[in-house]
Length: 391
Picture 1 (cartoon, rainbow, N blue to C red):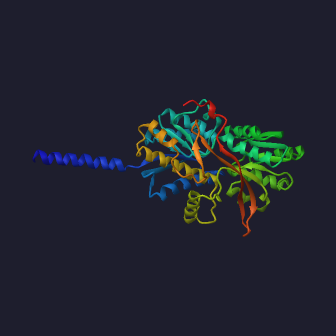
Picture 2: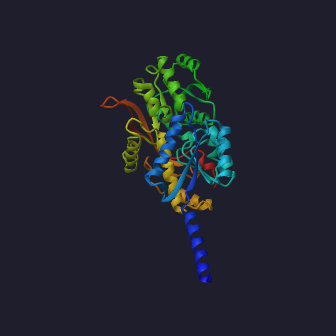
Picture 3: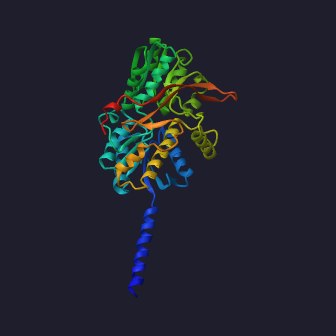
């Protein structure tokens, strides 16, 4: 065989191998909670992220991607083990999906220590937002405190003077109460940390009844929120002592479970299904097309969809090459995507700067219960820890 022919064969093999390598999808490790009472949250986050991929024909930012989904079962140790396995056995360099801050605290540091990238669609504990911030750690949801600061501002705007506050005893719960107190201008007359696995709130409800507050603020996401609010209703408190809550305490699934007794509950959010912008209208249309009108997306779905778009923008900026994390970082920080929540940018600690809105549970003209957006209460708002982050 002539040398030219051999050379052509070798060159063809090299080009073919390069094409195959170029077409290999970027794997995204999606560690989330899919089992137990909180499982619907993980399902919404997984499905919204995958919807963004499907809407782009299996790509994000023009780059082929593969979502590798694992269930942490709300167990920090299990989340840690999953991350370790995906890092070592599949060489995954890009992660997302964690819902709970206790799982994040146990899992994210090892991801970052391995030189990989983590983009949070939900959990955003305060200890990662300030002095312990990291160049490979991004958050697209919020910083935990800011979610509850918005509720504190809302309660103040609504004229409440005496508040009783509750949250589970873990990092996000601690951030919740700290955030609410930071913005609430009235008096805190009762403060309780509940258990993360609690199913009976009779003792706490008795304390609320005895304290006679103007308002109750509570942070209980997912199944915890369903249980707490249902027992609050059954105790006859929902119609006598109003609630001002963050969006995790009155999402679409909790509302469906509680029913008409929830009418009048005030909340705050950074995104809602009724937002009037082109990106959100497209998301809602595609969601309904895929899942039907009866499955209303929770804000977890909205955050996860935005996370996929943000990752896509960064992947586009680096042509799918994750070998240079600083280059990926610079592409991510541009936030070159159309968020379904409207204005969005990253602050100096790589957490969102965004608007916050008051919402209220109401009955629509067709009789259906809805969470209705009322007014903007905070504009271009970041978080109090950003000033301590030096990147």
